[in-house]
Structure formats: C-alpha cells, structure tokens
Amino acid sequence: MNPQTTPAPPNRFITIDMHADTTQRLVDENIDLNSRLPNGHLDAVRMREGRLDAQFFAVWVEPQFYGTGGAQAVERADKQIAAVRSLAERHPETWMLATSAEDVRRAAAEGKLAALIGVEGGYAIDEKIESIERYYRAGVRYMSATWSVSLSWAGSSGDAVGQTRGLNDFGRAVIREMNRLGMIVDVSHVSDKTFWDIINTSTKPVIATHSGARAITNHSRNLDDEQLRALARTNGVACVVFYPAFIEPGWDEKKSQVDREIAPLLDEASRNAPGNPSQKRMARDRVREREFLRRLPPVSVARVADHIDHIVRVAGIDAVGLGSDFDGIQAVPRDLASVADYPNLAAELRKRGYNEADIAKIFGGNMLRVMEETQSR
Ligand SMILES: [Zn+2]
Image 1 (cartoon, rainbow, N blue to C red):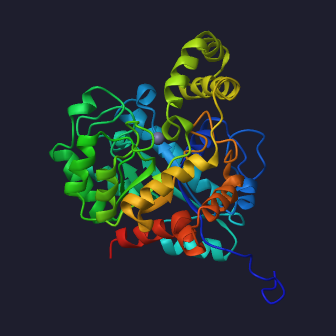
Image 2 (tube, rainbow, N blue to C red; image 1 turned 180 degrees about the vertical axis):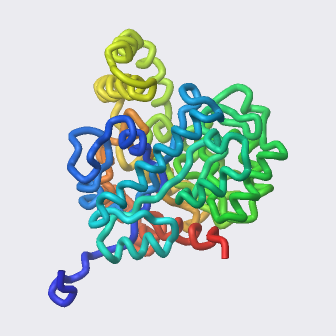
C-alpha cells in the first residue's frame, strides 16, 4: 500500500484482548486460524474485521484432566505454547509472535496480527520456581496463580479450600520471580485472600485479565471496589470479561438451571465424541452453546460497557482493559459475538461520552503501559 494515496483509517488505535481460549482449539481441533471459521469467536479474518491488533492466547491446563502439576500438565502447556508460536512460524505474513509492547506496536504498524501468550493457572510450573523462567523464555508474558482449582501455594475463587487459602511462602516466591523476569501477574480466578497476598507481594503492576465488577454482578470471578482500587494503585488494569455469567446479574443462576436440564444431552455428546478429555469437553460445550442461546436471556454490549463505566468511576480511566474470554465461553453478548464485533463496543462507549483518547486507553493503551512497566530492564 502507498501511504501517500491511502489515508489512515479514522480513529485508529491499538486493540489488545488479554484472554482467549482459542489455544485449545489450535491443539485439539487443529483449526486453520487464517480462514474464516464457521464457529467459535476468533480467527484472523474476523480479527481484521474487528480491528483487533493483538491477542493474548491463554495456555490453560485443565487440572481435572492433566493434574495440578506433574509431567502431563507440563506437556499440555508446552503443546499449547508451541501451537501459538507456530502461528507466526508458519504464517509470518499474517502473524507476529509478540513479547513486548514494542512488538505489538511494530506488528500493528506492519499490518500483522500480534500473538501473545499468557498462562492461566500455575499448574504447569509443577511447583518449580525455575519453570517460570523456562516459560518466560518461551514467550509467556502473564500468568495467573490459579484457574478454578486451588493449589498448595495459592487459593482459587472456584473451590471451597480457596476461601481460606492465600499464598504460602512458595506462592510469594512465584510472584517475586515473575516480577524479576517481567512476567505480569494476573489475579483473575484467584481467591480474595490470594488476591490480597498478591497485592502485598508484587512490586510491579497487577492485572485481572478477564473479570468484571462485583458491584454490578456479584460473582466470585469479579472484583469488588476495594480490589479495583488496589489494582489501580499498582498501576495495574482490570480487563472486562464478556461472559454473560459474570457480567449479567442473575444469568449465572439461570445457566446452572439449564445445565441441570440438559445434563442427559451433555452426557450423550461426551459419549459420542472421540478423543481426549478436552475434546469431549469441547463436544459438551458445543451443546451448551446451542442450548444457552435457545434457553437463556440475551445480553448486549451495553452490559460490558456498564462494567467499564463502573471500573472507570471507581479506579480511573487508566485501570480498564478488555479480556473477552472468547472461545472459552459458551455464551456471548448478541452484539459482541466474536472479535469482529469490537467496533460495537467502541460505538457504545462513544455513545456514553468517552472520547477517542479514553477509548484508546481502554482498548489497548493501558495494557501497553503495563507491559512496558513490567518489562525488566
Ligand atoms: Zn478463565
């Protein structure tokens, strides 16, 4: 393209999504992310349509299938990291593996999509401090202590033991090692006790990659106002998730009821699906996606904007980002149904009085700042 004859697109800013589970699809479904996929929420074609410049791909080791540590968990993580890295290796004309804010800016300037790697849950470090540096060298730039299952060293919001468990000495050593390397600490999924232990341990900005505001939807996966302010004090960012169960009041309870009603359908899908436990889980999730759409009330992009508004009011415009959880959720807002729909969120924010500088911060500027501040010098 000739820059002299092609005007820059209006309102151009860098958009970064902090969390998508597409990685699982790369490994278990062998999808071609460069073509328009008939299902799921993310591919390169729709990223371009939605002007999504950079995607953090989550490396998620399902502890119920691969353990909370051990060789299987490590292998599962390594496979996912390799899958993300191979996007850029096989398709350098489309993808760039990015490990810094500078990389993200360079990819955007060159018209490439930035692929970044984050680890969801510390299961894959197998209780070894030296694993963290190995993952850092492989390109991992954030990690959460837990997913929905507690570890010996960190409590999760997703189980009973997590209610009273924070970080132990090893857990604090994990946070310090991440700080040292320049790997961002993610608090989405951890228990409240772990959250505060992280805040009191980390010397670098702390982020939530995919959570909402508890003041709007009282869910353990969301953050209360005190927590939002604490993140802001670290110079960190709360990235709003798009999953109706976390953002729409009452939706999660209705979803649980539907899950009970469709249990026989899910069992059947599981039985009929070939392959490993993750592939069977994906078959169940496809049924859930279909039935949730049919049986549950629709949610709109306005609800995502409500959470953004609240976090801006409580913690400031510099403390908000985006973390869709696309391809990891079985329901989406009807007008924010894939990465192609990001412009609908920008339009909703403009309608609410946000100017372009505000939107640029929310869509990516704040996270670029955190990445720069976190990088070890
Ligand atoms: Zn998650």
